[in-house]
Image (cartoon, rainbow, N blue to C red; front, side, top):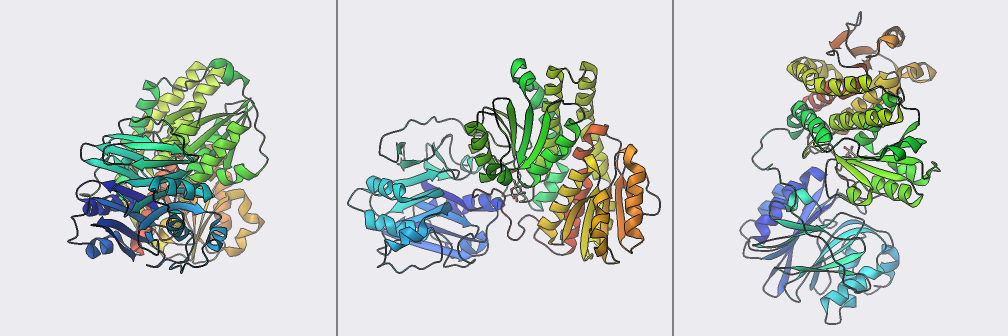
Length: 590
Ligand code: G6P
């Protein structure tokens, strides 16, 4: 989703372009930057890729103050006019914005004399700044910020003085410094390419950023203290040539080892025994892939936990009446830690007296600040928009968390607890075996690529794998796909089975093998083609044999061939696998 960057340091244009390239992973459709030259602001923006913007600004590099933006359209079509930055009509203020100004229609009504150049909510902010300016930029920004409703991280550049200003409410924003200058950004890993010390801007606050220091203010103008710390190291992405998605799938074994090591070294669950024994219900809340990892772990945790284990989509959890009280624990699962729906769900749990536990891939994210506890899944940066290695690590870490909970509650013996941890050690080897056979998946993917629709089917613990396989395929190949509990097919969906349809059947539970064979027969007899993923050969259908994994942990391995299937099918169709259309990595609006 939209990303913002700003800086006061030499090389403002080249650094901003570099930062925007780093932010590409969030998903975007247009980009732009504004800079200050002498007493004037200049603005450059374009629809499409950062490479186009880079060509437009080629040769301009004497600027030391700039703000930049990658846009993921929410208000108004994808166009250069709707791309950020926006200038006030007098050209004295430029802004970039991530989030949604919910009351922009009312604010526009306060500016009847202004000729708007875009259809966006964001442009309103630039014009309000001009209208509110009385000679003091900080007061202007504070006055304007008090008028805004919604979620936003906004960077403001003006012709008045050398400072940058930022406003934050709910959308991510970090401010950082190095001996070279000052920076602001939506992404902590991105800013760490330049900053050696960073602070997360508080909600409902304004930052006044000079080259050597920043002051933070509540919206009423009173100062607020923030803590600076050393940011996590930034991964170098510029020199990598190839598809990040494939690279990230091949990193799964190493990241699973890292996730296990980190979990054990941090001391496991880290909740006191009384709290854990009191729990009546445990929610697993997330969006997209993160939700699917919750779905997968809930299906196995129910086998050994006596509390209610309930996976819920974050956006549903916020507005539905799921019960929460002092005996409720919620795991908030999010690779980025910035997904707005998941952050709101955490707030809802806290407001109702429940305990929150973030399972993220990003320390110092909005979610880790909101939650009572957090654990890092240690998958390291994902640059492909479609999530892969984080899913495997989320499953491994959540399974260990639930095993620890069950041990404390006495519903899992020490022997079985140890067995689960040993199975986690075996996961990287199983994934390596799958990766060694990736050429076979590439062959299977050719047929998938030319299907009119693909149905992923599985029962109980395999159903979440089907959901994730289907999500990956539609995200990056744009082939219509759906996931179904295999037994549910006969209640309607069989009507769609025909020769051009492929069914991907996942079957890892020996107890349900015969049932799955019946489901497969139901679809083959109607002409659909079946590809099976199972630890045994399924008669009469192409089967990719999965290496044996502990019964509870197939979800962490069975998804790998499906990630590869989606990747190769998308490649075969010539899709941009790392930056699929209409998809954002970090969805920072509700
Ligand atoms: C977006 C991405 C998905 C991701 C989901 C949750 O929809 O496109 O790939 O799974 O957000 O992201 P999170 O960072 O919260 O795990």
